[in-house]
Image (cartoon, rainbow, N blue to C red):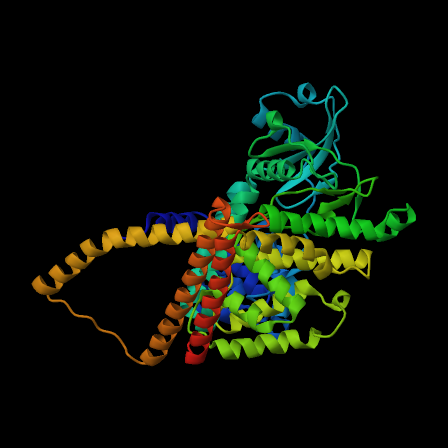
Length: 564
């Protein structure tokens, strides 16, 4: 039986056949008739346009990226947003497409003030002139999803009102349902494009759009960022007025500032350019490496500079969240760039990546080396770390490693901000600025408390496994005796698998021995048992020495075995 959501999408697509016809016709007009014909969609095109041979002229391969951009522009907000999302996926699509999609502008004519006020009144249940002392009729910004107006409260507080476009949610849902249908047809009828996972792209886009269409999520993101930085004078986050905020209306504090991209004005008004670059990047690194929560759309329009060189961030529709493991991966890659250790970079990508096939680690390391080596020996200020990280991600994709999308957003955000910082201060050095944060994170990683906690988790998992293993083994043996039970497998490459298992078990033993010895010695030191020297337990000191000696011996034996 078909999945109910799929039935819903199909039914919704056919209920909106006119929109589907419009989309297909626009693609045909821009030279994609052959692709549509391969997917059996040309019958939807009006007959007069099918007869017209000019409509069936194929587009040249070199012109495809530009033509797709023109298609997206003509089809409106949903497709413009899709193109903008694809422009951030340098790991997935070629540069020529990325560069074209970056040209898509999310600027559309504003809708009328009457509709704006009706939306506010429908959402907040009060007339605008009761809610606000003043409300500007002219918007200060108009985009495909919403537009922004200035307003004031009766006490003089300055606000901005972000109001969703009428029927935008319904329009978006219709377009997304059609995109799911088209993506499925592309994957089915054009095998060359299946690698790009068109259905997966639409699913990711759908999730992103649904979040952007809910202003409560954006308000919560802003408040969370403000809470993290409430004691940091370098960052200002606009206050959310929850009593005036709904899914379709967002009321926030109005912040007056200069865009960080308006460099001539900043210089002419005497701002400290070096301090601005330093503060903006330090704030971003703190978001990533301390809180694991960062602004995901750091273009210059969303970064304002206040009178005292403070940074203000606006528009929290796109944010990134990373866990402790990803923070540490980012730190490891960061510090590996400083140490010129391409092998560590390669191994870290393998650790955090999702495998779409077998990975030749040695070849992967060689390719990483080819990307990173040209930067070695150059001054750190000449190393564009954001671009370098993105290049390493692309190498990973080539080898079948699919890096998590949060890390991609992080790489894009760091690359964008680094570019802005270098425009402000050409001598700016992101790698140098990141050292204190990396050092702090690495200290936390190897602290006794962290090691103890990791060992505790490992012991807990082993205990749970020991409890269920006999019962599972009993069930398996019973099934083998009473049922027709067979195991089929392809033994090709089994020797490599055994070698990998051997190496993995040796590494596990190595880690457990070191951890156990360190923890035991730490406990003795903490309890201060036995004779003391300079306030420290001699037994604990001996334990540490033995731990180091045994670890070295074990490491030597494993290395000599060739299985390390």
